Length: 313
Image (tube, rainbow, N blue to C red; front, side, top):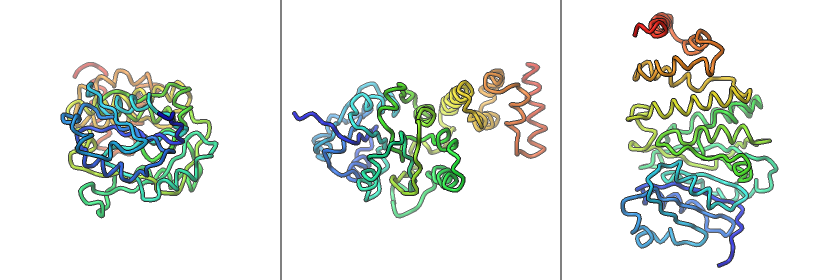
């Protein structure tokens, strides 16, 4: 078999949504320049996929089955071990690319930057003619960058893996991998990519279409079992990484601490006693967490925190 030397490797984790996966694959042209790697994360009927879905047998596509059931991060890491392209792209199986994606990525193939960030569209998965809002934070940061040229929000706060082209050498050199957890597997990885990139490019073009489904991981955000704990853990690690590398301008954990106050007080207490690992002091942390909140919230929050601090609660 001829050894592949593709320019692009597109890694797609998949679990039990084969019809949506086919939609994603059909948005990617068949080309010897594009290595497509589909990693199935132990779907119950994956042994029938090759027979039922001819798209998985198309040229330049590798279909890899795993039996671990380790989540999207694990599947993406498996894909990374097989990637050969100069550029890496990541897609979720229920999303897809815009019609002219190949022309777009080819127009940046010779870029000397390490990461290229693109805009995205968002639609309802069951009716792609209906707009959704899952991409709002991505496009907002890109639009702001195009106004002020501030790279930090792009490098530090683009938590999603999709909608970007990453030089494979960057991930190899710094041994960057996805967290193998059920939630927030991509956040710490995306931060490392942004931090270690020598130069970045931000493009005012749409490359990717992210979809919204009622049963997706992003539904009922942080209300599913163990989700808040895992997302908070990732945020804490990200804050520590930024602090250690003199890269911290805002604290990611702040958002989740507010959610803990509403949904998981025991988790709040756990991180309350670790705040000085990412803040100069507990008082500075409390000020940051309550910033922009109402006076009523601040009074209740400070009283509660004092009781926690005194170990009354």
